[in-house]
Length: 228
Image 1 (cartoon, rainbow, N blue to C red):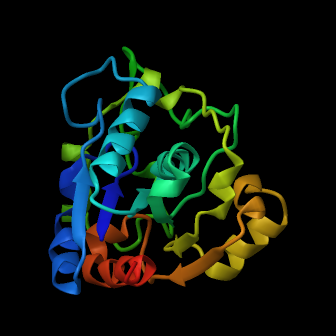
Image 2: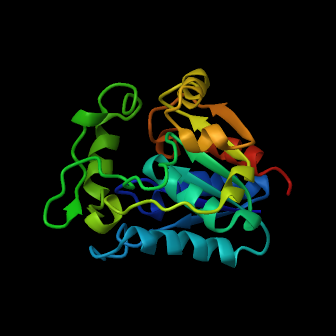
């Protein structure tokens, strides 16, 4: 099965290299996606452009696909479920949750000159970055791609309630499955509160398990994909 890999803010498709290498022997075809504005040199890309790139990968899959979204891109994965519910075998959300209809995609940090650059490590001190050593932090920051404002401040639009039928796996890195379930039950994640099939997978990592635990993450993704 095609497993479409969508990285979060500041990342291009290369971040999935270790995961992709570990997925192939498990019988699945990994498809890392480099999003418009996050690797193609275009600072004018919009959220719609990024959604279109994910949908193009879904449409190119020979059968039903699994879409994996990391961090902010959990919303991109959920938008794929909204636009192509019949084409998805499942959605996997790593370290994040989908935004609701009408919310901004990822308006989290300061925008300068039309882009939202990586803000440095201070906002991520603690469990998020605890498993990244200094060399890994330097490498990440050097490779970080500023996100176009048309992406970060794009407005999420969800229209098809069939998205709630798509199976979801929430991968919990810097938080626990129990915490995730509490947030959903408490109303903090209204989209998943309405989803009919939500499972949880724990992984002992910080916010970027594709960097620090690629083999373990690949096993979780393979299990989520099953044998459809």
